[in-house]
Length: 348
Figure 1 (cartoon, helix red, strand yellow):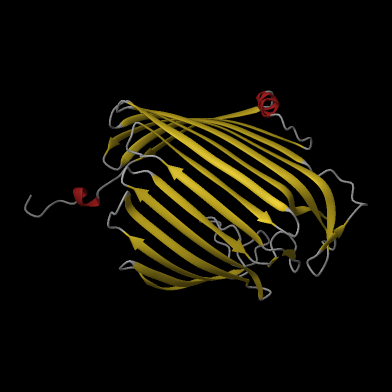
Figure 2 (cartoon, helix red, strand yellow):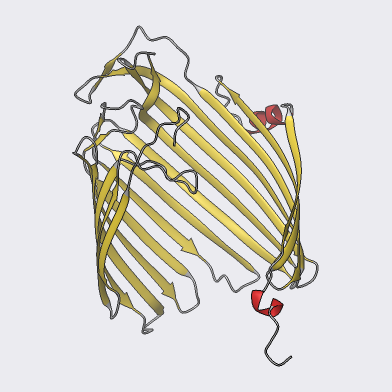
């Protein structure tokens, strides 16, 4: 039900057939989200109005050989359409190969291509679409033995669009250190840079003119998470996170009804964005009975959003510290009641 007290009825459906035994396996599925399907009161759906047909074939080797303990390889095809209007959204062809070595190190490589597509979501106005050229992407992932007190992972990837010179490069890394049986420290560093990316910038009040920006986007995230197990039922967890995103527009363009973009030299608004988020969470957890727990949490949040892009990371962090903070304290108690224990047993 919407705010104007009118009702909208939408629906979701899924059908699937698969073979999940043996070395060679496959699956074919069909998902459908109508344009009025909205489950967000009870969950989260990024967008509706979509249909996706997916076919996956995979081959699994679980018998050790040479230095390999397991080897899993798969390839899949995603055929995506828009529900309303009925149109092809895109085709994505992807492969993935994961090898687990006998020393429990892991290596994963995947990549693929997304064909030309009609993006009905980026314009932010019903009935409009943006013609996105095809592009390639790849990822390489490495991890050490997670059973060791000191272990780490690293992920490196990128994407490239030949006709518009759009490209992206990203890397994620993390290290985990266990000290004894009670203390653990996790740290992760993630960055994602994109160049010449085209995306929504603005629109007029009448929704008849839509502007896109050609921009460079830089993202850097640091997460520090120590935790301490006081006993097997009492623990203390700290999470400190700083996220920075800078988006600098180099040119503005106007979207046409055929999905193409043309230069818009008369548009002079500043749609650059420099966003910082700094969060601290400390949670005390006590499991005082089977299935029952008490959680006490303190959270600190600092948000800073401005139109002047600051490329220096330390300047971003310093500016964030001088921004207004929000603090909150919460207490949550969950108590599990076994109904059978409340019933009198016969003969007692």
